Image 1: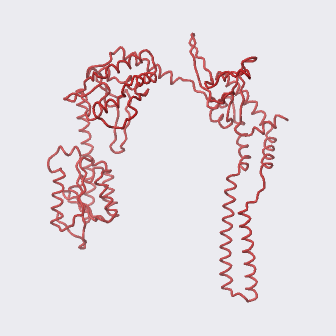
Image 2: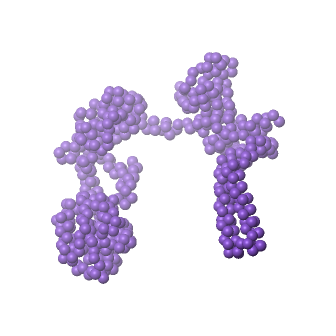
Image 3: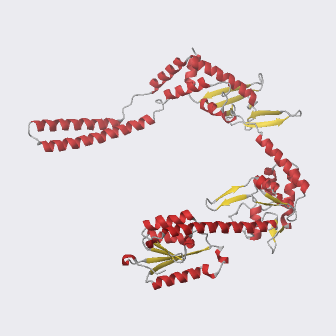
Length: 541
């Protein structure tokens, strides 16, 4: 393409070369050395000065976060370059939107001339329509390449191969020379021990503790040491087994020789990975030698499903987060116990303290259903007391605000108000002088204008101080809170009375104590978030 140098402008060029990992398998015409050679020849023939060459070797055209490209952008921002040249549009990028942004917006905004040599594109020759068209073709090509790569991966997986042998192999396996997955006998005893312990219904957390106690390397630590995979630093955590490691191994059908693929879906555009539902994944049985027998695996799956169901059906209380022990003040714990007849007995109990022998009190212990009954009863009593004495409630709040709001004069405001009075005096004197002819009109108006500006500034300062004081005035919002509180009580009914969000608005704490000698019934004490002082006054009526 013969260069037409617009208005004899001198150009300082940046050569940009890019090649992806996929392009490396193609012919020499796509290589970095070839791109550099033809671009340098073009600049030499057209007497264009070369500032620098920017190279991204092994970077996809759909991702613009490339070191060479980013360095070139910095030099553009620093006004070191006013021309960018590439072998073709695909070297700049293969994403239609992003490539179009740089050609049609970024480069023109920074007065950059752009040339795509083989595509006959020159931004000074107004052939952007062709550039936009080729961008679309490039994006389609990128999608086609991705599709071909996935097809190759699928064929490899169907043969029992993993997508890539560069990633850390699954714990218990390794790759042979052909890239096939084979058993790593060194860790087989550990895997079998994990499945046997789980089969005996030992919790994953307890299995993890046992493995840590025996100083057995975690899967990541083992692979880092065995296969030199340094994905993340694991210093000090070599034996730090987690319950999720155990759960993941128990659920993985690879240990019975089944290959699972299509677990995730990756979007190159959004750079996000989505999990695929199990029913939409593909399973290939007997693809490699199993480590665990099918009977043991199925028993473990049954236990895992049972635990999952129990967790889903776990009792959830709206009141537990508010409950405290009357002896030590600790939060209560939700415990459950299955009886012989299949009934589940639940209780909120304090696990932090023992029996108080002096006071004859026992640690907090109450059935959730019993607590709910007590709360409903107390809420109805509270509702009746407050709503039947609504006017009195608001009167008590008003008196409380008045008695606790002390009239204070802010010394800063006093000083500012004194300045305002002095300015008014000066304005009055100036007016008097102007009237008797001692001060010309022009000077008088000028002085008054300055004084008024000072007054406006001082008044703004006073307003700002008062605004801050109002924000810090806890009593000023108390009356509004009392209206909200009464409205909540008014809207309570049998359906919503124990809703968590309502309970949290009304109460700050539910204290539970149990008498160990005379009466074994638990005592429940409710602490309101606000207005305890009002309730105490209303009870005296």
